[in-house]
Image (cartoon, rainbow, N blue to C red):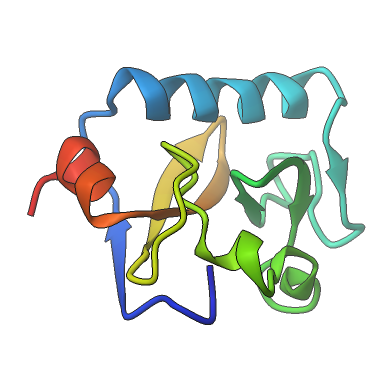
Length: 123
């Protein structure tokens, strides 16, 4: 979702669609059951709560946004694939969903083709 992203959106107070709710719930379930591989910079303690970063193409990985985000970089055809419909598109929109979960600020990155962007977040 890096090479072709012409626009980027950040969602904070967004009514989640069924698709996005399912994706975010899966990430949260993995975090709560230790099924997510987290970099050492993301702490589980509320006192040390930090920002966690994940991407829907790798929801089993949670990193800090500063030092370890390169793990999510895509190149070639995967970088052109919509995370919602899985169609190839040269005009993906990068979306970051910003959510607070039990004191942990979680950023969920994903790419949407123009049609799925309208379905998910409108214009």
